[in-house]
Length: 187
Image 1: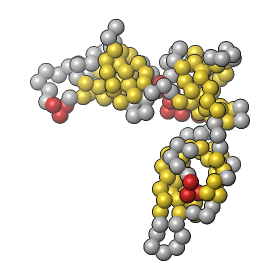
Image 2: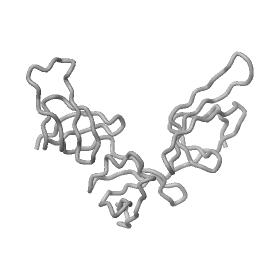
Image 3: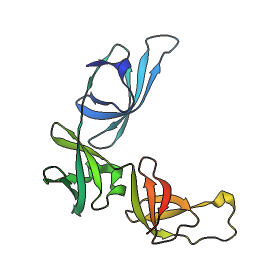
Image 4: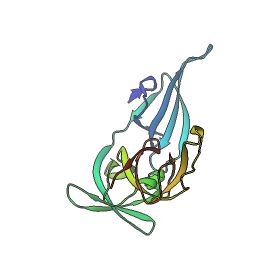
């Protein structure tokens, strides 16, 4: 158990029996009354967001997650099959555990699967991933600098902004933290 004032961004805590990842933590000291911690949390089970306030004297249980490197193999119905790289054991993860990370599921890419008490509660994609552009507008001659990017749909269905020179069929590297174009990959 830790004091609520010790909560920091990135920590994993238990609140009302659920496991949450701390997205933001702000210490608030109002003019009157007690100081408190305003926390923004993401439920690791169903990916919902929660705003929570702790009084500064409250105690919070910190949870620890084990991370296991697993390779994404394929989709089977509504589940996604991953293989543990250490013992080659395969597990199926439901879409509610994966959440919006489904945009990065490309076969043979290694993910970190977050486990709590032996059960998967979430996945972390690699920092960058290479995806193929399946749909984008053609290059516009005479486009101004303000129109220097255009939307592109990638092979997993995610839409990001890319520079004007990117064409359909090209491979682009994106930052998975911000869904942002980084560079074009030469074949």
